Amino acid sequence: MQTVGGKYFDTFNTISAWCEQSLLQQAMDQCAFYNALLSKTVEGSDVWRINHAGGEPVPVSQHTLTILKTAAEISEASQGAFNIAVGPVINLWRFTSGEAKVPDGESIKTLISHADCSKIKLQGDAVTVPAGMEIDLGGIAKGYITDRIADFLRERGVFRAILNFGGTVVTLGSKPDGTPWIVGLQHPAGEHGKKCWAAVPCSDESVVTSGVYERGFYVNGVRYHHIVDPRTGWPVQNGVDCVTVCSKNSLLADGLTTALFVLGPEQGLNLAERFHVHAVYLERDGKISYTTGFNFVILENTP
Ligand code: AMP
Ligand code: MG
Image (tube, rainbow, N blue to C red; front, side, top):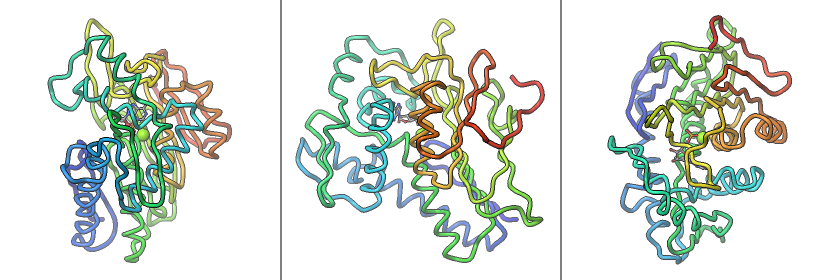
C-alpha cells in the first residue's frame, strides 16, 4: 500500500491505496485547486469574491454552488444550528492564528446579529450575500473535497483506498481480504491519533467527526473551541465532546456533524435519522448515544 501526505485546510491529510504513488500524489494535488476555490483567505477564491462583493451577485463554480445548496438544506433542517454566515464571529476568536483569545461580548453580539444565512441567494450560477455578511465553508468544504478526490481515484480504477483528512475519513471499497476498513474514533482526551474510544467498520462510506479537541483553547478551565452556536456567537457548551456521522456522502456527513454538534444528542440524532445517516455522540460525562442500528464497537477503558 502506498501513502501520500499533504498539509491543506489546516490539517495534515493522507491518501493510501494500492496504486502508483504518482497517482496518489495527483489526487492530493487536487487539494490545491479546491483550496484556491473555497478558502476564505485566498484572494480571488469563490468564497473571497462572495465575501468582498458588497452585496452584489457573484458568479461562482458549480463546486461552490453544490456546497452552498447542501449548506442551505442542512441549515434549514437544523433550524439554523448549521450556519455558514458565522464567519466574522469565527474570525473574532482567531482560532487558527495561534493567538486565540476570548473576544468582548458586545462585538460577538453585533457580528452574530448579522449572521442570517437564510438571506444568501442562489440564482443560476450567481451567489448574493448581503453586504456586511461573510461566509465560511470550514464546516462543510472538506466533505465535498474528499468526495471529489474519491471520485478522481475511482475514475482511474482505484477501488480500494482510505483518505484521512483530519476529522474526515473516506473509505473506498474494503481491505484486500474483503473485510471492512476499521476507522478509529479519536479519544477527546488522547494525544492526536494515539488513542481511540470506538471503532467503526465501513466500506465505501465516510466517517466524519466534529470534536472540541480539534481547535480551541482553555481559559480558567473552560474550553473555547471552533464550533459556534449561531444563536449566541459563543462556542457551543452543551457537554458534547465529539460527534461522528457515517454516510456514503462526505459532503452531507461533514455539514451534519457540525449541525449535530450544535444541536446536542436529543435533537441531533433525530436530524441524523431524517437524513438516513448514522451518528454517535460522546459526551464529557462519558455518555454515549447513537442512531438505531449503527454498527460500531466501543473500545475498552472508554472514556
Ligand atoms: P467541523 O470541524 O466540520 O465541525 O467544522 C468546524 C468549522 O466550521 C469551524 O472551524 C468554522 O469554520 C465553521 N463553523 C463553526 N461553527 C459553525 C456553525 N454553527 N455552522 C457552520 N459552520 C460553523
Ligand atoms: Mg463539519
